[in-house]
Length: 322
Image (cartoon, rainbow, N blue to C red; front, side, top):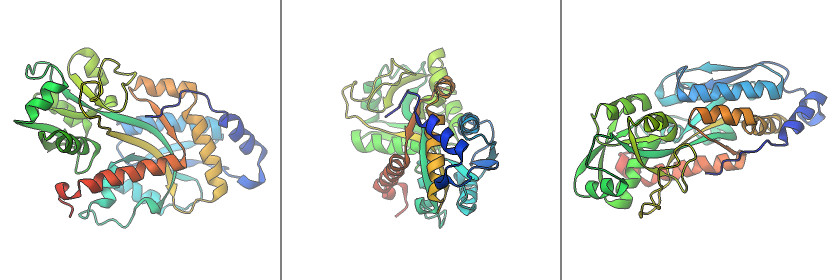
């Protein structure tokens, strides 16, 4: 993860650009902006988006209002974003790999894809973790879990076909010849409740979902699927540190616009998003949620989304999408 904890000079640049009405930016923005969140109000994606919206208001000098949609794994809202006028006054908050899973799933029959949008910036990357109930005395560490799973079937939580949690299970089975069987739930809250109630053996969730239960001792995290430890759960090792092949898996949250955004609008939003995401107060607010800012520019976000596509393609036959 390439988190940047610094205050960007983009704050000065974008304020000068907007305040002086530079010719290459025309008069954008000169009105209210909608930020589409394709999930219910109050959830983790919505909370992160609202914190970002507050920062954007300060940078752009215009109201940024979150508008929530629900349904179709996020695609009710994302289709609204794809169909919006490409004027910069409607942008959206994207969660991936759920985003890619929607348009790659043949059962969804979607016409949209990455090309239907303008990638702007990645906001948050939330690494996957592997957790168990603390009263489950079969597993003291991740090696116990992997070795047990190599000879026994174990149930693990997922949040839909090709979701980040499902992909974590598929990656573990492919790398270590384990026998995790996915039990699909409707979101991280249900997954966590199933693990707390011991209705499932293993939780494949994210740092932001479970760091509180780990600190309170309600759940035990055995490993993080990332290249390095997280500052939020510093005592949890990576797979490599535990003596296994390292795997990476995460959920990302980013900002996109509809296709064909004008270059002058992209320029303003690009600098505004970088400034907002790297504001020290925003970094602290997001950290309180158990998350870390992972700012990536347009190219970095596009690469991230393409990597999600590649990961899903690798397991397409196992998912049953061939």
